[in-house]
Length: 366
Image (cartoon, rainbow, N blue to C red; front, side, top):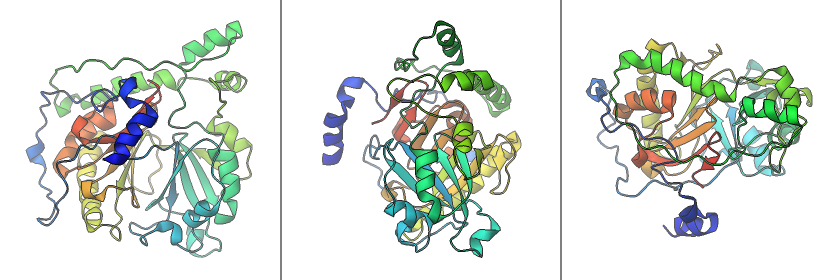
């Protein structure tokens, strides 16, 4: 509680008006989901803290790196694993663009990871959505210098291409967008039969921030965004000897599965994955660990993120919307609403949100 009070005074949340109720649009009050269709239950021994307010119970982060280890459980502190990327990052210089959150994951590393020394593996860097291949602990400084420090962060505004066109023609500097007022909750009813229409509408909305072409990218490279300059994934790749490309998925869901830190995480992650698969497969959105078809939802188990007493923790990244949404106290019967409203629409149950950012609105929870 004391930490949260200090944070509220040092970050100015009491003046910004950003709250758990308006950072993201709320799920409609008359949500008509048939949650009783979920037959998966947590064990009877699965008890979590239910009374505390989850809002702002996590620290801010600028960049999040997901490291492939092929495991779903790890030693208590993953940066103590000898010869690992996690250890190398913990000992390396800090990125210049803010706090780096590091997560080991069950993402599949290349076969050489199990035979070569040092271990070459795969990393996904968010929110730039850059996937770097065959990176070893010896490459950590290159990774930080070329892919993390110059990259957009959770607080880097996303630029509307139409605004850029006008700026390019007039030779002006691009200014970051101002935070938008939170819209009032809307009341409406939808069934799962409407999800296809919702996906189309979501992609249309998201395309506002992703329709640029090669000429726009070239123009952006010569413009400053506020007080800092960022680079695209393509430009970052061209400047490094490490091979990289854009992460193919449109959404990522990260589930804490770190059993050595808390047994509840080892119990909850597989059950939530099963329920996520049940709802995503009929929509053609589910992606297995080795399924890199464009689009869809990639789901990874990750190590300790903090707040195990509020298990299960889930972090959702939405590429085209420029959003990151951290939920807690997630139960299997919440998954239908999370898929329909949070993953596809960016809407949340306010009582479940711990933190998040929206680069289109230019707002964060911190």
